[in-house]
Length: 228
Image (cartoon, rainbow, N blue to C red; front, side):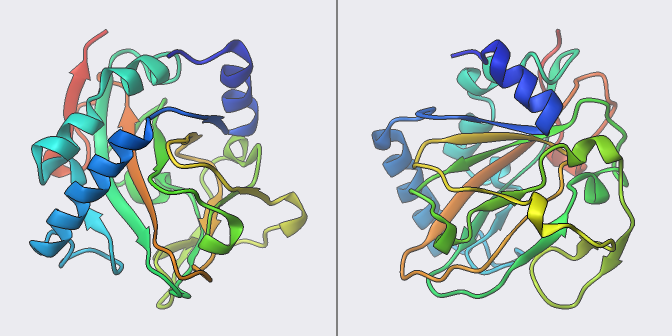
């Protein structure tokens, strides 16, 4: 699978694009079983939120293989170049009836302290059907063009480097998606999410990539996958 010209245009103009049916249900079921096993073994004990696993690509062969899946790399190749390297990966889960929110933020507020990149972006893969009530991803289209914004450290919520600016909620777009859909977005895109108001878990497998010419990333997670 490759991005269409319309999807590439949307990514550059809006800061994000969606790819539906990226993974079949059988693969999602296998991944959820693996994540259940990892959580039972305590993989998420040091994570920021309940049901989260940080450095996800390092904790098992299955999760490592997902981060380096050629289907993903082929998809993002027009967006991440020259070459492709992993910056970081994590499982972000919203447990049933969990009202913890993730404040509006930009990924590069966290990432630039580790390395500078011109083409850094993330994939956000939904492992279950995700509706607004689950706390789906929310974005401000085109906000990536406004550059890195000032932040303030918040004590509440799950995203500690929240944007310290007024945001026009009339610009907000909700991104409810079916299981197996992948959202591709710029590391400068303004995004956040509300709490989970349902009795079902909401999981997202998130991997951030950057060009392979950047000499380093987020600690030992950094790994070059393609050189050109």
